[in-house]
Amino acid sequence: MWTLLPIPAGAWNAPSPVAGGAPAGTRRPTRRGVYCWPLVLLLGLLPAAGCGGKSLPPLSPVKGKVTLKDGQPLTGGQVTFVPEVPDKDSKIGLPGGPIGSTGEYEIFTEGQRGAPNGKYKVTINPGMVPQQGAKGPPKLPFDSKYQRLEATPLRAEVPGGSFDFKLDPPK
Image (cartoon, helix red, strand yellow):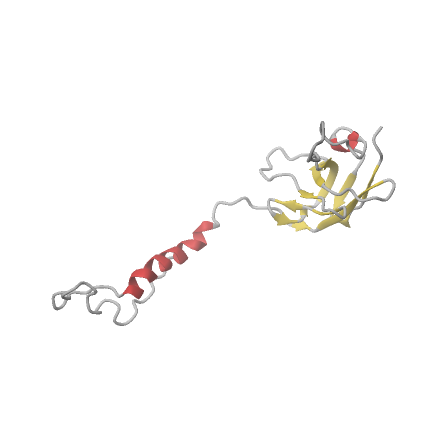
């Protein structure tokens, strides 16, 4: 696994940078040699940096748009895909993604684009950043059932590509 790189010609036989020089036959690295070896060491360790990570199942791309019943886009928040049949042994996080200002979203799993194939319940959580000067949290722009896993009617089956969701107004 480890590969030794050749030492550049003359790297160990250069004159000493110390005043008065070094005794004959003394070998000192040149500046280039001094600065290259840490780089060579770091580059040699890079292949080991990815070891031990979580292995993901194959992911399929998932995108879509979240709108309110009146056709206006939801301008912020989070879409989360929760498996209908949870795998208790799975160590990967739930697929999810942010909703952009146009209502569009893209799903990611463990930082990778897409979601594992399967059937999902979908929850939507709005961006809840209060306006400056507001006297409380912002009003929820849709029915709260979409936030609760046990109540959400939204479903998706991956692979499927694009899933657009229209949300009912608050009750």
